[in-house]
Image (cartoon, rainbow over all chains, first blue to last red; front, side):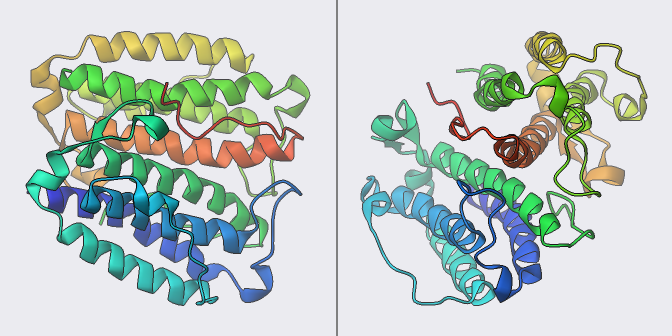
Length: 154
Length: 154
């Protein structure tokens, strides 16, 4: 399997679980947060969806500008937002060339050292898994006890 | 950097954060769990430490037997347990040959398809990040508001 297809498969093995959790979140829980200093559910989910898209966009454009963009989401339904972002993210990943994946990016300011596009996407997947791990606790606290495995290996 | 050193660096960039969180957990919170169906803190932390060690042991021995081993931990202090397991895990990772990392393992019964040692370690790191994501919520619920970044990029 190509580098790119491996990355897409790895990403979707986690994003599909994120989306399963999002399906369980009812709108009356969008403001739920476990503690006063925690991110509310809607913000956490939006942060996950938009962040991974930005990780991929950085690899595509070759600089950090996507991380600086501020955009207010107009779609407030999290299931629809997840559908749209997941499709757009896969499309963006599919557009990446081997060169873009192997190119070293000037990201030391944020990530400690310069890393390749492929490595940056790996950090983006780690970011998704981290916040999905947060979200599992939130969703259980909303009363759901039947939760999926942390990764979809089918 | 060699495959092996990259894996060790990736593992430690997350394990060092796990260990920072463990430092914050006082013994009177070892039984804490966010909901009645959640893993209690001590069990969650012990599960993280022992699981990643087992992922590495599977790569070393080339079969799933380490996952079947049941061993009662006698060290009940989580900081000491984390120190011991982290050191033993790094030692085990350092012992892996390029052959062991590239060898396809017969793990389809658990992981959906057969994967190489390197890929299994990547799943083990994902498992660590997932549960560390859970642990962040637990530790915040214990009253800690100054928490590290999800990954140590220094």
